[in-house]
Length: 250
Image (cartoon, rainbow, N blue to C red; front, side):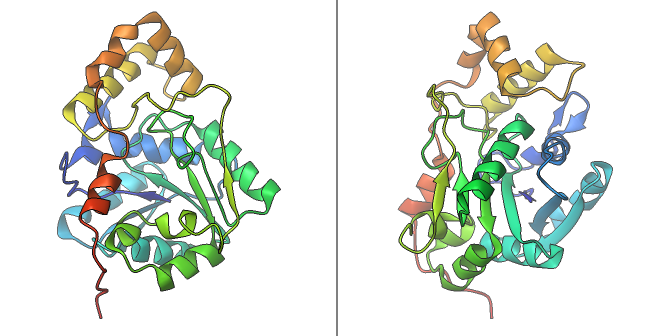
């Protein structure tokens, strides 16, 4: 499930920004669908009027579309998974157009082999920011939906799960080389410029993965300077600073 909305606070409308002739969210949906471990892809967006138009983008990418609460993203994500009859859900954010399907598969494989409630490469970070994958069992997701109370836990969906290892069995996907300082997500115009430069280097091949991107950066290290200096997980850190008890809609 790919979550996205038009009203991003840092770069409004970013999910429809063009990259090589297609919108950013189209690329994310197609990349998610390329993972062999997923049975289907859902764009989980909001009921806000400006998000209704994302249905046609999802259709063009061959994905389903689910509309839910704008602010309570955990509620939206849970009901989308419930609607799909999922036993487990893979969470991807719509600002990751360099998502690697092989890393999605590796995270799902780890989740299954460990019998985990939650598996991710985004908590104990070794992968570039922008390749984040979270896998959660329906049981763990439902418990988080029922019990999470902080606004940061509702907006960012799964912190309640990974913050409670005494309640849930966690598994962390890590690689030998720590590349977590690399920034491949899109939160600013500079990030978008970086991603467009990577796509331009690798076209017409659009089904590239992490190693192809690293090869580009090896040949052209100056590209990494386009969005250097941005904070990792800036949105989540901002939510923590502003945390409050979340009031659910009646």
